[in-house]
Amino acid sequence: MDTGLPASILTSLDPPLMVAMGAFVLALLSLILAARLRNKNQSQLNALRERSDTLWREMDDIRVSQFNRSDHSPSTSHSLLDQTRYQTEMEAYQKTWPAIWLLHERLGQFLRTVETGESANDLRLEARNAALDARNHLNQHRPFCHETVDELLTRLIDVEIKAHLAACQYLDLVKEVRHGASDHDRRVLHDKFHSLHEGEARELLNHLVTTIRHRAIRSG
Image (cartoon, rainbow, N blue to C red):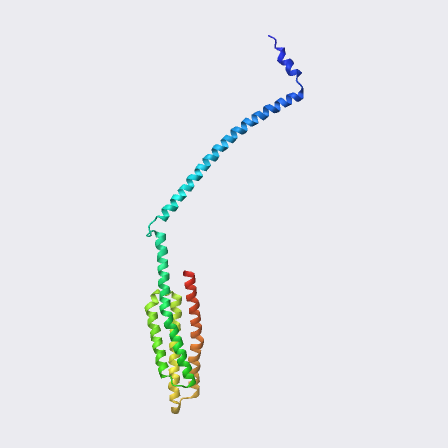
């Protein structure tokens, strides 16, 4: 057998042709490898897509189960409890505020009449009754008021009552002018009920309005 033919063929090939053949073989191997990698990547992508679809189905199942959960679930019950507390607190303010404002208004009318020297017997009684009514409303609704609002309401009513008492003492001194009551004592009482009502009480009233408004907005 003549074994010199393949050797002669190899030796007869030009170097550029051999390079071209080598490049062709490398390209063919690269295509085969790329096809295998593409198939492997596609398999991994399909597996990942299936896992993703499974995850989304599980998430949907969780959402459905939460939606179908009874109203007595802990989260829903907690939300309903907060809403009930908010409504109860707001109702307490709605029932207490008119009495507080009526007290401030009636007392203001009484004090202005006292300052002008006109007869104030009816207004004196109306202011007293308004104070009692405001105190009763606060006592009834105190358990449902926020502690800050409760404190402001209590202080406001106390200040208004003090102003009412000072004005009543002022009237008594005016009636007793013939019995030696001094102008100084009357001025002291006048300044007292005026500063209590127009100063401290008005400031507390504004603070009360701001606090209730913030409670209504923040809690609601």
